[in-house]
Image 1 (cartoon, helix red, strand yellow):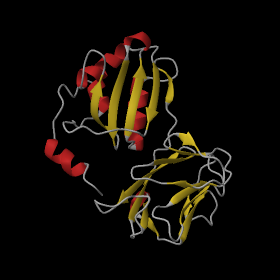
Image 2: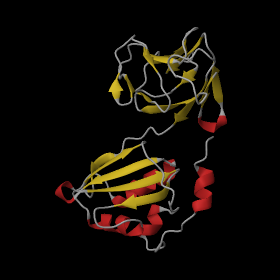
Image 3: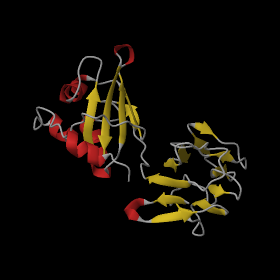
Length: 236
């Protein structure tokens, strides 16, 4: 079967021979109340005899992307393990659970599929110190409990990447520093371009801090929590 995990712990099942409609309409199985989403935006379907589910863009206004590539309307595309699917600004992550010796496209045995909903609908980009203040950025990430990577591009001087999980700062690296020091360097990064993406990879030695505490001098050193990190990033 397939299972779609929604915010708040709810979920929907999808089995071979079934389909799920995704869109803004009240009739959709997965309803996304956003002006960027069409009433009938996309479908996730699992046809009988197929070893994996497929996604189809239903001629939506703002499009559907698979692994960052826009889908042609009304053309089915197979979903592989770990696939990243975006419906306008909303992301779905596809995870397949298959026997170790199986072929994802050829094996006819029943497959288990989980589709995880990521409610990271946020527009965060601009120029640091002009469009966005550093503390404003961190407060937005914390208040929305966002997970992803904050990318600060310094032009010829390289980039700073800060990883967040549920609004907490978990890792940071700049061309000349890491951890808390990399965040503090951003106070002198006016003019750099800023963007936020829901894509990220947690590290095995992550720390757990509030980025606003770093700016206020209340976090002088990262607090390593390797045991908690292992549990936090275990399979749902």
